[in-house]
Amino acid sequence: MTTRRTDPEAGRRALSAWAVAPEAARRAVLAPAVRHTLEMFAEEHPGGAVELRVPPYAAVQAIAGTRHTRGTPPAVVETDAATWLALVAGDLTWEAAASEGRVHASGERSDLAALLPLPGPRRVCRTAREQETR
Image (cartoon, rainbow, N blue to C red):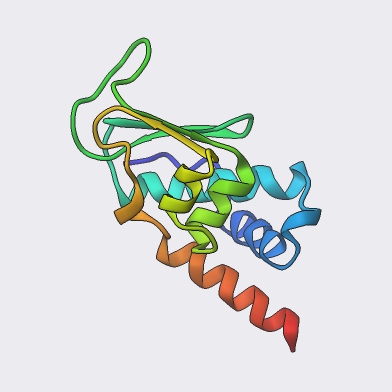
């Protein structure tokens, strides 16, 4: 089980703020939104086979399989904050992100196409955008 370090409500607020103005999002919004969604991903897909990195904000281990304790993990996925949030919200597909070089994945189980978007963040973003247009 993943230890939550981000207050879920603060994470949802940050994700909502990002959803309505992604191009204007700064560290105060990106950091809690990324951490919150990474923690959610690790809760949804527990394990230690893949290290998911979104520098400089956070990294988590997720997905069942071999667990590592030291050094470079057997599988690594790394991307930037904007790409990660677009992936979890469903604004960007894994295939598009990979083909555009926006995500770097190596090792077994590092293809996250079947695991994204995440339902919770997708719903938060959709709701925020709907409220913004009213």
